[in-house]
Amino acid sequence: MALINHRTREINFKIVYYGPGRGGKTTNLELLHDRLPPGRRGRLISIATDHERTLFFDFLPVDIGEVSGFTTRFHLYTVPGQVYYRLSRRAVLQGVDGLAFVADSHPAREQANLESLADLEEHLAAQGLTPEQALRIPRVVQYNKRDLFGALAIERMRAALNPLGAPEFEAVATQGRGVTETLKAACKAVLARLVGAPAAAASGVEELAGDGVDGATAVDAPRAAADLDAGARPDSAAAAGACGLAPTPPSGL
Ligand SMILES: Nc1nc2c(ncn2[C@@H]2O[C@H](COP(=O)(O)OP(=O)(O)OP(=O)(O)O)[C@@H](O)[C@H]2O)c(=O)[nH]1
Ligand SMILES: [Mg+2]
Image: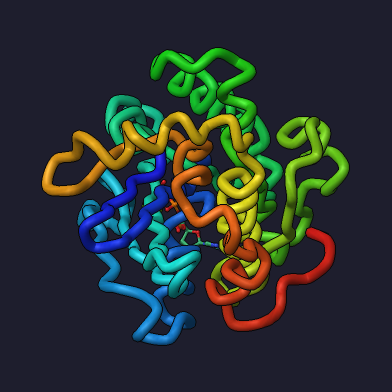
């Protein structure tokens, strides 16, 4: 659920980095924090154990500038991948607008990747989403740790983790490879869902402009689309380009 604040003309999206423990989710956010210009990103907040395992989440706000007169911000979160932090993952997933699934290419983590994906679907269902609604949440898949000797074959990982053909990227997060590409694709997919929403949602405009706490209203993306100036819809590719450092590659791999 995108959050629009009419008073301050801000629109906020939430992207959650999901995946098995030690797969590289936190490393992705650390790299983004290092690489994005300071004016584009806020402080990286990590709630972690002494041993650098995520305890609750990491959080990094990324500002992509104006989209149709609205300051547009992506709030990036990671979940704790360790199996027993199930409830934390569920909490972090609340209100998610887009997902980046970070898979571990280490052969010993093949099962952990699968379990994490199943865990994700279970949490989305627990939020009351039907399987169809869950599938409509924009998703990208990152095959991380491609530098490892004996890394799982991409075809094998794709068949197990990305059967529906979401945008996908090979990555070595520790070296920054594939990291900004993953973020840009996620931003792009989230914005594409917003601008591709049916105009019939125009009836939601009054509701949107109405009851908000301190001017803030939680809305479905389709309604947000209707609220943005229909004549000057955001160019999702250009806006997503602002997320990263280089132009978006035409294809994932
Ligand atoms: N070889 C290699 N190591 C990586 C890569 N990405 C991350 N790592 C290492 O993997 C370990 C775990 O990375 P994290 O980013 O903490 O993993 P995480 O997914 O946040 O783990 P949890 O917080 O437990 O869920 C760290 O030692 C990283 O340096 C990679 O692409 N290649
Ligand atoms: Mg982590």
